[in-house]
Image 1 (cartoon, rainbow, N blue to C red):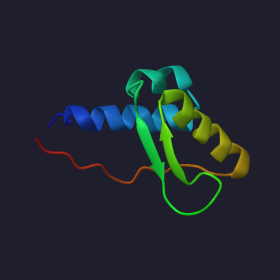
Image 2 (image 1 turned 180 degrees about the vertical axis):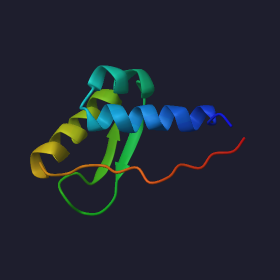
Image 3 (image 1 turned 135 degrees about the horizontal axis):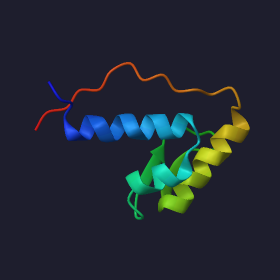
Image 4 (image 1 turned 60 degrees about the vertical axis):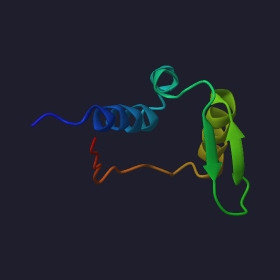
Length: 78
């Protein structure tokens, strides 16, 4: 059975993020994306727009250089 289209997009996004492939991520994120980091830390708050969100990703990499993602499962339905 083929993956749901949204599952395919998420897998592409996680793979691009792991490789720091910003051109691919840019094709997957809307220019007007809004990203919310929870908590009270240095990344916390709303980040509006692709540049701001990607900037927060860069800041995360600076703060947590050993950070890695490991995708366990994705579920999707129409």
